[in-house]
Each structure stands twice: as C-alpha cells, then as structure tokens.
Image (tube, rainbow, N blue to C red; front, side):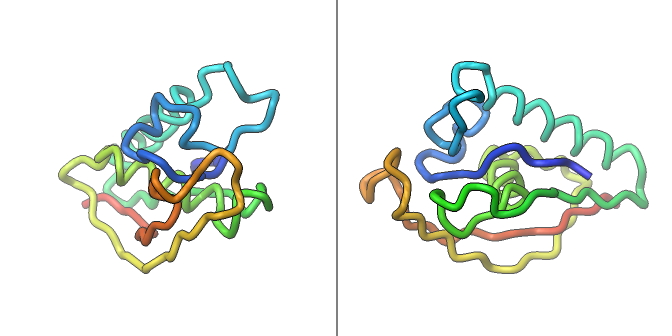
Length: 126
C-alpha cells in the first residue's frame, strides 16, 4: 500500500515530481520538496511491486482536500505515476475512467488544464 499525502490540482501533471503547483499542498508541506518526496514514494512502491510477481500495488488515500474538488490522494498518485510514465514494462493494468474537473482551487485556471479526463488504474506485475 502506497499512502498518499496530497491531491493533484491540475497543471502539467507530468511535472508532478518537481512542481509544487501541480499539488494541493498544505502550508506545512510547501517548500519541503514534497513533489520529490512523492516521486520517491511512487518509484519505491512500483519497484517493490515489481519484485513480487503476485504483488498488487494499492494507491491509498481519500478526498482529503475539499477545496481541491472530488479527487482522492490515491487517484492523484496513480494519475501522477501514469503521467510521469513510471511503469516498467512488467506492469499490467485494469482501468476505469475518472472525470477530473477542478475549478475550485485558486492555484489553477482553465488555461493550465484544470478540466481533465484521466484514468484510474489498479496495477499488478506479471
């Protein structure tokens, strides 16, 4: 289980490992290399899952930031991993569609992709 610590707010999600503006960070999380920490957690979780052919990687975390809209930490971590292409060739996935429409955050606007349709996936290794 990979526990989430923030949710996406939009922007260039492929930069989620370096760009704070992609995440809805609380004051105590800002300026503390949170995107890099999240990237490290994602890479470690995916690597651990690939070591065991029977593993199931679960991205955990609920809708903890009401102002960010209806997106969970778990879905945010999957979306970020997918956008950053962190999956190794041994990963397989089972997908379901998630409509991500975030107009409630002051850090985003329509020009930076606040309205997105993304995919949530359960990933296993083979």
